[in-house]
Image (cartoon, rainbow, N blue to C red; front, side):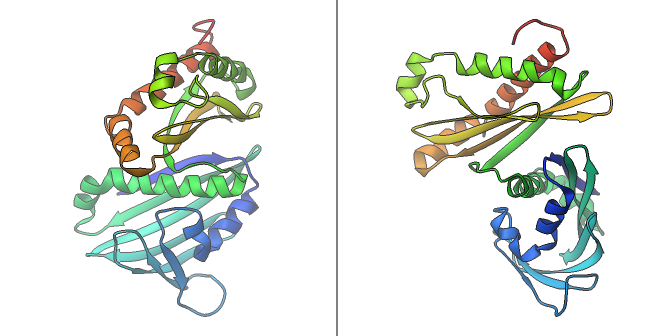
Length: 275
């Protein structure tokens, strides 16, 4: 049973590898790691061991099983009879690299664990992958929430105007009642804070209960391009927690983001003339 997450990172593979092999630095990249400490002497390599502490889990010793710079890193541990193998695979591609993180579960209890914990494990892996992306690209964002993707029939340069047009539509709307109720800044809810054609368009905003960001990212793939929407948000205090439960917990956020992607895809593919 394998759970994985793969993303494009707009940074040289050597930079991503530098972050990957620095296992003791992982807690600075992702909230899924509390501490990582090497427990073996010498340089990192097959047979090296590390003590890893993760939130709400007992410490575990992970043993490196594969190290192939700058392409692949893998290590293993065993929990409750389940052998877990965590792998990092870096594939160079135009303008950066693709980073694939995977967790393979083996043993008598692997199927049951995957069935029960798959959503939690996938969220953890995706959070870690985004941590490598943010560090490699030098991005400053709130806490990672999720990422959704859609395939387009056109290349990124052709799809870029559709992304820009949708962002202009989104940031040009005024929500007077909602703005007063939530204290939206800006009153449209979003403003464009990053624009790097045709790769990324970043939107940010805030209100009384949250500080958030939404990145639209484009990358060429065989036969077209891939458009992703990456959401980040912090929800401070009890009221922030309640707001998060209402927006994220009910899947309202997921439906809204997927609707955005469908609109942009329709415009990019020529199905409609405007967002």
